[in-house]
Each structure stands twice: as structure tokens, then as C-alpha cells.
Amino acid sequence: MSAHGPLVQLHDLDLLMEEIQAPEARGRLKRLGFPLEGEAQLNKARARLTAAIDRRWMTLYDRARGRYGRAIVRVRDRVCLGCFVTLPTSVQPPPAEPHQLGVCESCSRILYWG
Image (cartoon, rainbow, N blue to C red; front, side, top):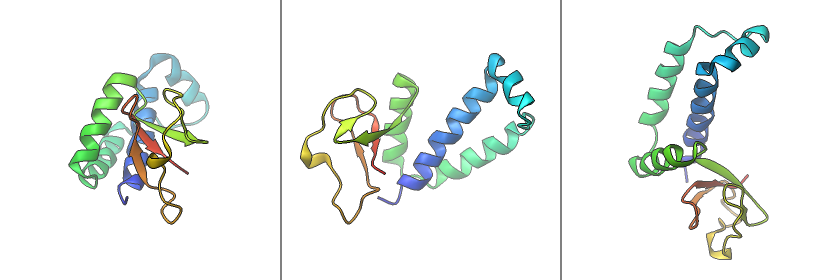
């Protein structure tokens, strides 16, 4: 599906914003030279990404993020790396579309092959 790029980027951005706001991480990021004053720019980037994502995927993403913190997880050898349940073969994307998104039937996280 075409939503995978913006959705994965949104997830990465949300994790980054969460880390920037954590007091214990701020000092470490500052020592690494990461600019911590760009939160307004990050919020603008987040708004652009959410506008590009289908509403259905945003609903699934928000629900999983609220419940688990990590809304998107990789799949390795047909195993959801969020809940470690082996997925049925019917959930796998077709070989022609290896970066298609799916939803884990067990934990409801968004699955990412790739």
C-alpha cells in the first residue's frame, strides 16, 4: 500500500519526539550535537505526514501507539516482532508488493515487511 512510507516516517518521527521530551535523553542528545530546539519544525513535519496518511491507517496507528507505544513492528519469518505470534501465510504480502502493510490479528499492531 502507498501509506507505508509516510506511516513508517510518522512512527520514526513520533519516537524521536518522545525521546527528545524525555529528560534523561535530552543530555545525551545534546552531547551528540542534536538540535533540541526544533520541536516546532518536528510538529509541522508531523502534521504534513498525518495529512498524507489514509484515515483508516491513522486510526489503527493511534490505537496501537496508545496501547503499546510502538505502533509499527517488523515481520521476520512470518513472526510479528511485537507480540511474537506466528502469522498465517494469508497475511503475507504478495511477492510483487513486498513493502505492503498489514495488521497483526493478535496484537493489532501495524505490520511492516521489509
